[in-house]
Image (cartoon, rainbow over all chains, first blue to last red):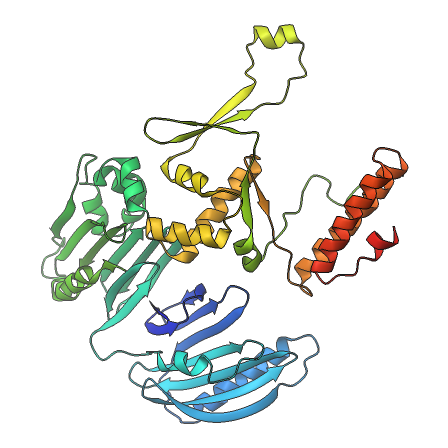
Length: 295
Length: 189
C-alpha cells in the first residue's frame, strides 16, 4: 500500500493504483484512482454545515440515482447490501449495489471536525468481495487531522499545509508539479521537478535552472515574484528573504517573503518553495517550507 | 467512382490501453548504426533513402546518404535498455528506480519518448494481443480482416503468390483467435 495525501485528504491505496484525475480543493474536491486496467475508486468531499445523521444516507441514494440516470437504459440499481461502518472515527453508511455487470460500494459520512461530507465510490473487480481490499482502504482514509496541518504526499514529495490555506492553483505535468495555497493575504508556493541531477547537468547551476524553468511561474506570485528577480545565473544556492513595507504603514502590515530552491540528492528532486505572508503567518509558512521533503 | 474518405488528410491515431502499453516490447530498427562518444552519449546514424534527383545534382549539392541524431544522457540510457525482450512495464520500473520518479511518471515520459522514436522509425513496438471482448480487440480484428482482403486482392493481381497469401492468412487467423475473434474472412479465403 502507498500513501496519497492530496486535497486535505490522506489515504492508503494499493501500489498498482494511481491518482488519475483530481479537481476542486476549496468547497469541494474530487479524486479518481485507477489500476492498470480499470477505474477502482472515486473520492469526493464537499464542505457542509449540516449535521443531520440522515445526510450521508440521502447522499448515497442521490448518487446512485444520478449514476443510474446517466446510463442508456435507465434501469434501477440493484441494491445488494446496506449497512454502516466506522471511518476515521465517524459513523459511515454504505450501500453495495450493482448495475449491469458492474458492482459498487458507495460509502458516505459526515466529518464534523472539518465540516465536510465525504463520499467514496468503490468499483468492485469481477469476483472481488467487500473484505478483499475495500475495508483496508477505508481504514486508511483520513478526512481530518488532529494538528494544525494537512499532510500532503504525492508524486515523490511530502509536505504539510497549514489548515485554513486552500489550494488556489496547481499544474500537474509529467515530472513537474506546481502548487500554490492561499489564505486571506498570504500565499504559499511549492513546485518540484524530478530527474534533478539530469536537470542540473543541463542547466549547469541552480540559478540557471530557476531562471529558465521556475521563474516564469513564480513571477506572477506577489512578493515571491520580486525575490525571483534577484536570482542570478551563477547562483548555486537560492534562499532569499525580504520584507515588503506597505505604502500606508498604519493601514496594513508588512509582507514577509522567502524564496528557496533546494536539491534533494537522495530522491533526485529540485524543490522551489516560498511564501509571501503577514507577520502573524510567518511561523506557519516556515513550518510549511520546513516540511517539504522527497519520498 | 473514387472512394474518398470523409476527411482524407487526417489519420486517426490508434488508442492503446494502459495494460497493453505496459505489455508492449520495443525493438530497435536494425538498419540504424550507433556511434558512441567518449562521454558515453549515443549518436544514431540513420540511412536516408536515395534521392530522386539526378546523380550529378546530388553530388554537386553533396546531399548526405545518412543523418545523425544525437541522444541526450537520459535518451542514451533508455536506448541501451531496449533489447526487444524488455517490456514497457519492466522499462518503466527501471526508469522509476534509476531517476527516482514515480511509476506513473516513468510510464508517461517513456511513452512520450518512444512515441517520438517510433515516429522517426528508429524503434518499433511488438504489441501483445488485446483483451478479448474489448473495443480495442474488435477494432484490431476489423483491421486484420481488411488486411486479409487486401492480400487476396494482391494475390488476384498476381503481386503475391498463393503460398504467400496462405501463410499471411494463417498468421492473421492465429492473431484473431488470440483476440477471441472469429477468423471467418481469413479462413474462408
